[in-house]
Image 1 (tube, rainbow over the protein chains, first blue to last red):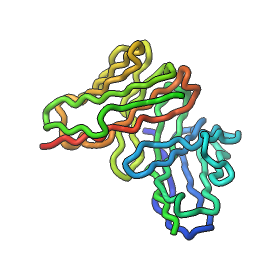
Image 2: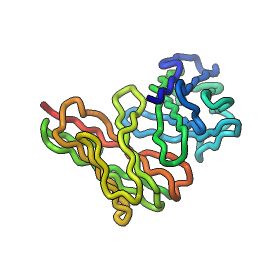
Image 3: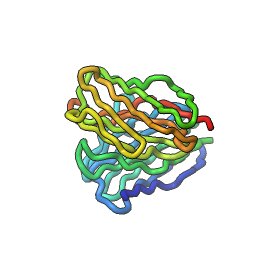
Image 4: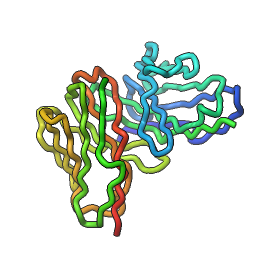
Length: 116
Length: 113
């Protein structure tokens, strides 16, 4: 079945540094990828939607200059958290879809980011 | 604004019983309703998708209904097992959701042996 690989699974970084998270669809072409953030015991919060080759669409309240999303190919999207702060510590999850609205999402296993 | 509500943050049932989870949405008309399962520290896993013109869909011990008049979907797990314990998320999609994929807050299901 469709597999999405997200890397790294855990990362600890110091305040002020940047962290890049990769999301790859291993056996299908992802026309659309979504990035979510999840706080403990809360649901997924959609951060942005990206289509291959075009700029990401960010949700209201998500700073596009802080959370840089690149979807350069049909199998790879990256999220870069720039100038990270402790409040950016969270669980970030990517998902990918190969078709339209009736296609299910395939999720990565998330990245636990801790900013010290 | 679009809103998704899943009933009861937590649901506890005995093994063998049927678990029923509810998903209500307001201010939009999705063409599909998807259900996912999420285990702690993992990404969600797709379970079932039901279309607006389908009343019911089944997959093994799972059953989903979709009532576009009530703007509600029900998710049933029959003959529940402790291994069914997880968080279940609903996600209306398509239609007037305009491609956005947002999730309900989830229901934490615990099946006790």
